[in-house]
Length: 210
Image (cartoon, rainbow, N blue to C red; front, side, top):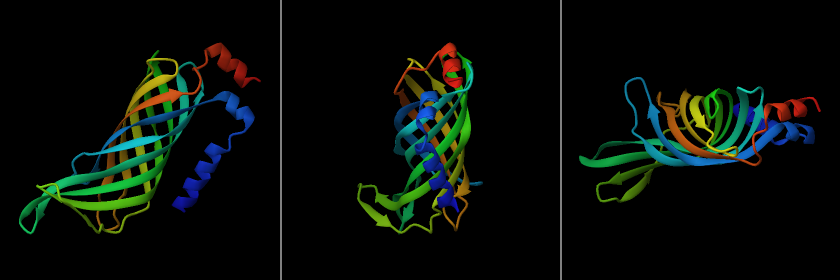
């Protein structure tokens, strides 16, 4: 069911017709992730990853936009522990194809508050154990759920008509592993490039009524 939802959403985003393309502003996005895993009583510390993909933005009014995204996201977590009494670092990396939809409120001219939902399909996972000398070995992970659902909140600064910086936090609502309660927790810092400049209010009205 989760895969069907993901593929249907992907198809809808990619099958916008020529008329819709007049109303949407498309762009690309890339950045870095600082991810972890949260649970009621514990949390993995931050793990570095990357994000990149494409987006479509629709202006609703002078203050409100809707934005959809298709992104590759590397998530996961790490924590310090012991293996046979020796100190080691356990790392888990999780690669997702994420689809997100968010509302953007421009509370001042160049800053927006972003709130939305995100669904993800896991396509790769890896567990690594590393000792103090930097030597690594791959270890088997517990059974991993291939679907992820998150809430997103962030702030975007549009420093030019085609360029923006975004800081976003994603709070996972679904379990990563089938045998534990860990969920994804990700801070993303990204730069957004729009393929064309944001239209003025007058231009937007003309597009809507074409």
